[in-house]
Length: 418
Image 1: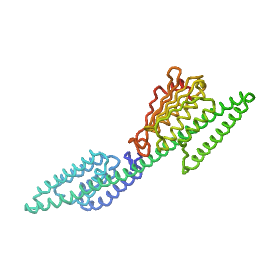
Image 2 (image 1 turned 90 degrees about the vertical axis):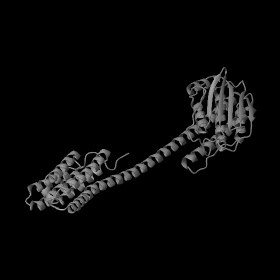
Image 3 (image 1 turned 45 degrees about the horizontal axis):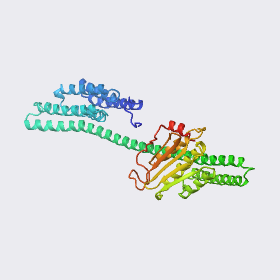
Image 4 (image 1 turned 180 degrees about the vertical axis):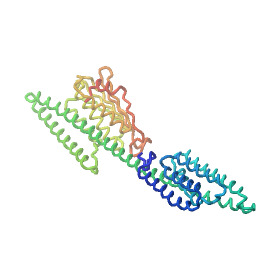
């Protein structure tokens, strides 16, 4: 995440500000104490001014200069509280320690403030020449230590509060950026899902339609003179297939232009139309059905697309002299098995098999395509979303896993899918 306040070297503007504060402190407070005639007092002021000037440039130099100024003051008991105004600079120094991002530095600043106040309390209590009675010495010691604690701990607490405030703001910014990134990824994921769905639908529609058209056109060409009725029937199938394909393509294009368009879903009654259309191509189909179809539009669409693609593969690459066996079980979700005799390998690219696997996986199920002897088998299992506890609204809560019986590449070669 990008950092609002970079923790690297200070900027030129910050260095100029610190230098200006140090110079102003040296001039104003130095002139004030120069009237006392104490050269060492002026030296302490200049030392504190130097610590202010380098507090962000070099933390070690700031600490050394601050300790040096404190040591000089403790070495002159006669000064007593004479440098109280100059000691206000320690508030800024401890502010720097309290606002430091490293925990060790903050703890060091807190420890130095505690040790310094403790030494000051003992030191002032021993100044008997300024307070002859014990009661006066205790009162003076406590008063001076309280003021020193207010300066040191107050500065440290102020810096620590600023650090926490900045971290809170940084956390809010990070959360907003994370939310934006999540939304972007979600939109990208939805866009990719739409692309995959449209690609699968386009493939299913075009591959199936053109396979039927090609088969009917070849049959009509061969029967043009020998059987005019068969030719007429083949042309009728071609026309019906073309009109159905155009309607499906228009629906897909409408969905791409407007997301609010309700998606058209093939119903279960279209299974009979699909089987009838495939039979008109000369394919013999043994249809076996079990159970009642559920009311799920997801299963209806998935079942139609899988059956259409499986029959298209059988039409293009199977041996049509042998009947194609279709088994559909609606007892628990949807189970499909299509068995056809293996014919010529053809020139399939394998997109059909992969598309069927992806479509089954999106629905929470799985599909396998493999060759057993001289037969090609396509088997699919789609769970009923109304009975499945894997997710809501028929969508799995976890990423679906594709479980082909064989590797997809092998399945493509074996079944010669489109």
